[in-house]
Image (cartoon, rainbow, N blue to C red):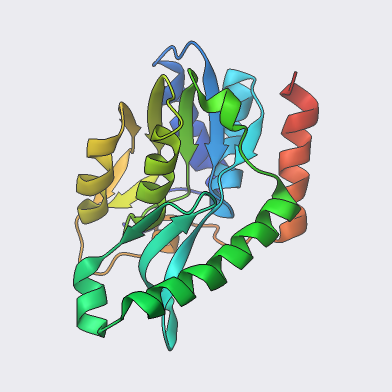
Length: 219
């Protein structure tokens, strides 16, 4: 296996995380996963802890004219994380940012209709685990963490198979526990480089996984 293909698949990465999470002995675990890839990683954790998976919907705020790049992220409850340095470099006005955020919120509402949403009442006093398949900039994960912390959980654990070093330094300060076996301090970082099997999940695949674990473990 070459240096960049660390995990066989998202499922296998989830197994690694599950073993570490089980050692935390969380009393009231509530498993949240960021679609799309985070849902697949969360499967092994759900089986290990015998709990269902709920999606936490968070989306990148795309750079105008270059939607693959982002200058921040926003959650379903409107929590924003903005990279002020990037915004300044791009010369984005507050009105432009608001328009982009409003468009992204429409996409978030669509995903909630398709996948469902978190149970805010359940978050309170729970030991929340937030899962994704990897972290490059950290915007989405940080927005998710901040959104959840506003709901007064007992604790927050970030469970991530791989992260860039710069993102890890940012999000690790915000949580009670971090499970991140691989932290890569390289200039050219892409999450997909750390999986042998890498593909985009369809909406139907995500819905199927969520239904499977709700049927299996949700009380």
